Length: 406
Image (cartoon, rainbow, N blue to C red; front, side, top):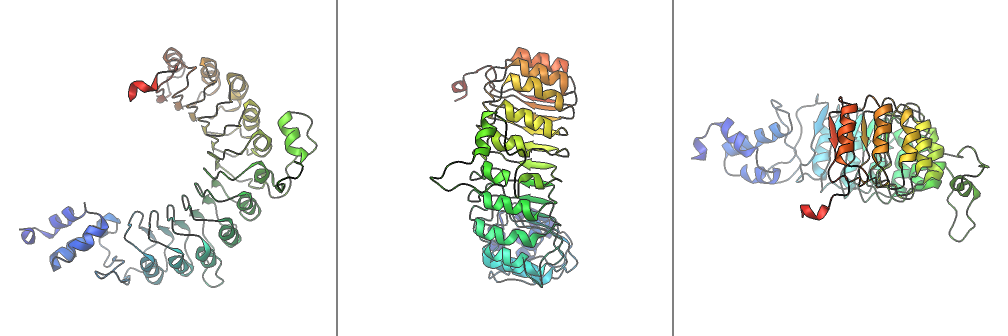
């Protein structure tokens, strides 16, 4: 019966199958093979291209016949291997945007092919968990094939990345890079951050969420003391509030990234006011996440307010040491704020809502979920004060019993 179906209908049916099942279906007959190829084209958004197959039926690499293609998204095609990337590099020399996210079988060996894509401007390799970065660093630093125009690079969730490979890669990226995402690369340390601050000074977006080994020394551009040695006085003075003998960070500090417009330090839990108060001084910064920083206090909040007055998106969820007193002084510094996440900030009360309502008149989205000191009556007053706020997340406010949902 399936043989009698029109090609378009068979293509539509096969498009719901994962890539591995489409490969199996292509073995049934010539008609099914054509339908499977069409389904793959549709899933990649490449309808009408004469040949987009990355692997033959036997799994060997296939050649490309669309040399003018400039953008290719293969994210989630989990059956693809290093051979697919080799085929891309040979047949699509003019690619500018390439997304390889969630290719679980891609390894360092396949990354060597990237050196042939000289016009590449955007590369997404997020969640390629087998990529360690050694061959990628060599490909990006290749004298004959480096994509010198690379403007965006995502290696988020590449948990195998280590400092050594990233340190060899960063100098090769050059000043053209504007967006770097290393979120959840949990093994990276201050060495990587300081290399970024040295070589990638034109970055506008830097995402380092869940890089939990980063600490104050890295942000300040200072060398971390060895275990057992006497701590340097700079951080002690900063934390205690006494006169600081070192008014400016030294070396390759975060302050060198003057063009930053977005910074994500979510869950970099070793960071404290000692560094945040000194380096978060970016007048152009539009988006900032400091969520899940247990050592952030009102002092750090006020420093951020003074140093980043242009914020439009701010995330401070689970910052349990930030209080109403801090917000009473900080809110007036952010008249442009549009999105604010304060979920699970246990010290905040309706006083913070009042301060935000009076100062942040452009606010559109507010999240105060699981804030025990804020009740629904305060939220209703806030919405009446700022009717333009389109979304207020208020789950379990006022100390609601979470066990009722279980």
